[in-house]
Length: 176
Image 1 (cartoon, rainbow, N blue to C red):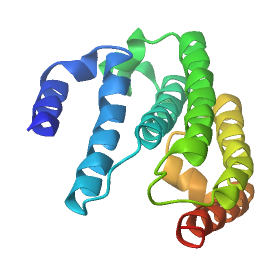
Image 2: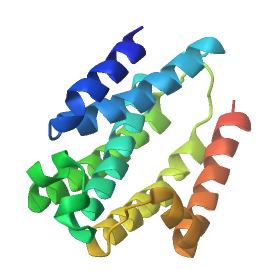
Image 3: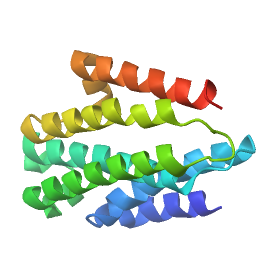
Image 4: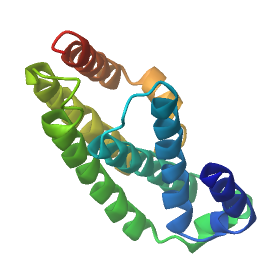
């Protein structure tokens, strides 16, 4: 019921409120993962939930920045006109640092009942940091309006992402 309530509030009012609209959309990603974990009876680590929140925020902010830079002001969402680009850039960097920190904490302390050996998870932090840093670099330099297009076209990010996913998957399934 909370997801439905948040979605309705967002659609009616919150999508017009700067920063709050980003936080609400990010919370939606966390709730979807949390609901999915509860369906399969797997507890979700607080660190993982927080990491998802900051990762979603970073991506959403990148989209807002690109939209504010690349489009005619007459054709952007109303909330975009309320944002200051320098503030959004700073908040994106904060979100990137936060997602790196919370992911690192998840690899160290999250899901302790399920993952006993953590070395591959800990190593997965290296390509994760590189991928996040590359995303923010491109977002700040050129803009990333469509993150899925960026992921499909940036070969460096694809390689770092593949290394990350391999280490993450091995860290969860091989070491547990």
